[in-house]
Structures are given as C-alpha cells and as structure tokens.
Image 1 (cartoon, rainbow, N blue to C red):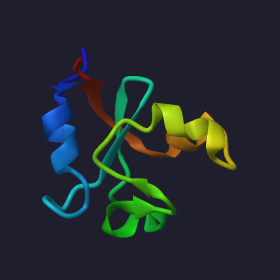
Image 2: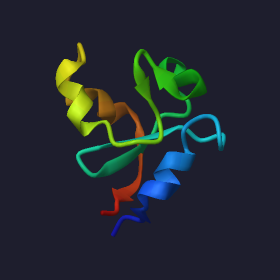
Image 3: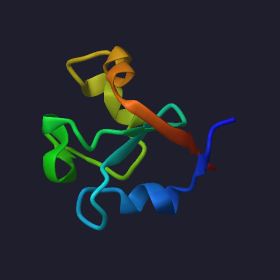
Length: 77
C-alpha cells in the first residue's frame, strides 16, 4: 500500500517552501526534484505542488513522461 499524501503536503513541495518538488497526476504523487525541467518548482507555465491532471492535454508530451519519476504516494481527496 502506498503512502497517502494530503493536498496540503503536496502544496508545500513546490520548490519554494521545501526542497522537494512534487507534482500529482491522476491521483499519483511524483517526485520531480531531480528533473532539470522543474528547477525552482516551475516547468514552463506549470507550478509544482499541485495536481496537474487537467493540464496535461495541453502539454507536448504524453503521460508516459511520469514513468521516469519516483512515486511518492497517492493523493488524498
């Protein structure tokens, strides 16, 4: 069973409040801290620390991009 991550805990991993940079997609929380594309918690017009599920349709890549990141846990409702 994976660890449950609250929306508040996710919001603090925005690259500003804490060192970790996390994002959520389809209920899964990913650690993107080591990605050069997420430096300072920003990736183009997207900000870390939030659920980006609804933003992916506008991205130039598919959801397979998340396969390269470690899963932190499941986003709690």
